[in-house]
Amino acid sequence: MPTKAYILIETAVGKTHDVSDSLNKLDNVVHVDAVTGPYDIISIVSCNDLPSVGELVTNDIHTIQGIVRTVTCLSVTG
Image 1 (cartoon, rainbow, N blue to C red):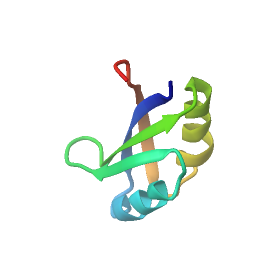
Image 2: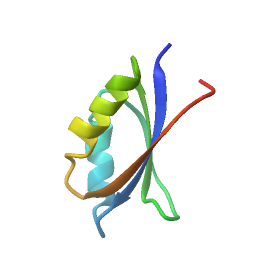
Image 3: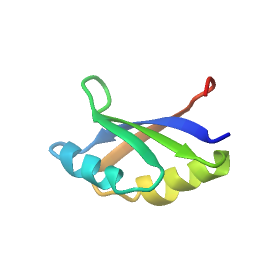
């Protein structure tokens, strides 16, 4: 069963649209929403396993220009 996670993303001022576009280009990113509140974007990712989620966040998402901070929340219900 795939591992699903929600990535809460804070972006630099004025970078939400650019970051959203970059996230949508990544293979394991299932959904991207710009939102209100303490985070600017909530993204849903789906990977084969937990280590793959970590690699996606560390190697692909954290390297996107304009991302200030992320919080990864693993889905426990599927």
